[in-house]
Length: 76
Image (cartoon, rainbow, N blue to C red):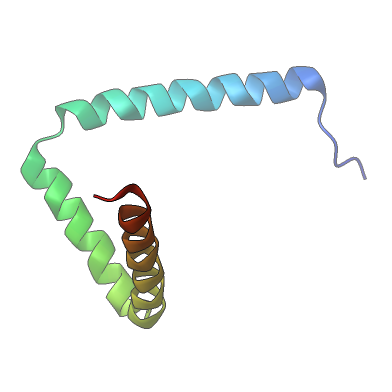
């Protein structure tokens, strides 16, 4: 079974997804803020429903510690 794609297929795949991403980006620019907030709330709720809060909290702690180190290093 062949698992590789040709260079032409890869280029077409990349071009297709660039078009999709460009369209999505344009749609997001016109989306009202209230809808963007609603989407964010839905994502946050799904994280809770899936039981990811502990893992996310641990990652958040790591990120906060990195920011503290950067602020100290750059004296800000």
